Image 1 (cartoon, rainbow, N blue to C red):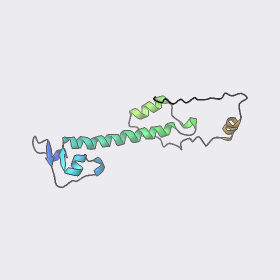
Image 2 (image 1 turned 90 degrees about the vertical axis):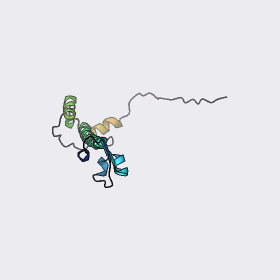
Image 3 (image 1 turned 60 degrees about the vertical axis):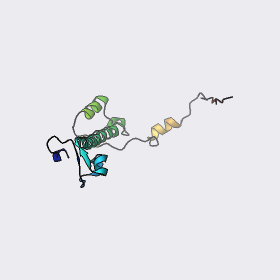
Image 4 (image 1 turned 30 degrees about the horizontal axis):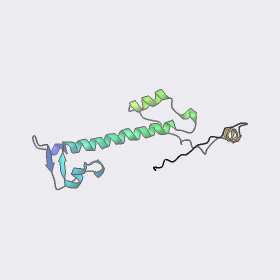
Length: 126
């Protein structure tokens, strides 16, 4: 939008709104008012998309079911800090999905255990 400005113009108005609504500043999309800040809005949305998508992708790599498939922390830092292509994550681990050996270990009851209790108190005015 900034290209449509003339000379030292900093704000403008239009009757014809063009572009992709998700990237448009609200004042432009609804009232046709544009400024150099309209471009900043669209750029901000684009940056959020790029940073958030990469973070989600790295997060999915970190929660893969098999520990051997998960990256180490130095690799995670590198993945977040550069533009290299990321590997496709395998399905994430779920608490309900365990190996049969883990299931046997979890299902065994310990010989001794402690019972945690909690006391609730309500404060009432006089």
